[in-house]
Length: 430
Image 1 (spheres, rainbow, N blue to C red):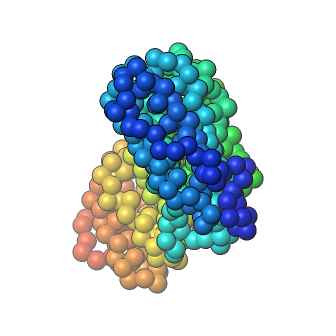
Image 2 (cartoon, rainbow, N blue to C red):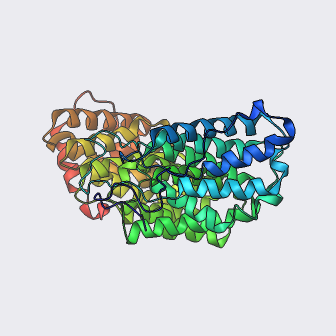
């Protein structure tokens, strides 16, 4: 569940007004080396105070002091060794990160449209950005000790961190993505937890509330995770593909994360080619019936997935794939028909058709011939004719036998060609 302000509150619950913020502390470089660790801890603790940047009652001077502390400890942790050899620093770090990152998100209009309106940018970002920079500095520090840190960076912390991807500020989601990459690499014991939480977020998104903003960023993380899977794939990974990733195609917001989703699915196919049948069956099952824009997206994805297919796998799937492609070629909407006809610009796709011409030509020639003469859009007719010419050049005897024309090259299409095409059974497309 995503926690958001109702829009009536000036400050979300859990924020601190800064009235008890400590007075200006000296810079770390101005005190004796023996006192720096204690001063670092005091500044880290002071940064647990949070501000909304929405209330006029907040102390601007205290906010500026906190920002200077955040910048100083972030720089110090990145340039000074020995700080992270002390366990209390890890505990304080997790408290500070939790106070600043895990919060109620600002109110967002229910009818907010990211395509039409300005991107949402949180006023508290000046502080949040440095908090995340400090987080990354800690994870990248030479003296970072995962064996000590795992007591504090536990499963609950990681689960809350993944929930923070619901942030509407794209800058925060980008920083979270970098942080999660680091955590997944450094904490082997948390990898299964991260995958489980990602699965839970996706299922909640699919079946409860599709208002989760960070699906694209989480899919990017997942793409990197999948590349590390070993073959044969574990049952849990295959279940995730079948029950979570493929059904994500049904989302009404697919346009916002489709490239990342396709990348993840291609990774699965490259890891294990036996997943191709399930993937294409799922794609065809969720194929849109009313949305032209979504159908064009599906065609793009289908072409990308075919590029990742082995020729032997294509031969097993060619009938169902070409039947769907044929339906799209004859689609009355010119954008769908045009995108389908662009498949023949793909050299790999043409090579697959050439190898399996005897099975492929009967499925596609009829729809191409009808489109070349009957489609209302002239440019689509021209494209269909160009495709027919290409197929004729690839295998002239087979082309002629199916359409019942001379195997000799001809410059124009005789009327009897498309009349013959009309007789090719429509059942081949069903």
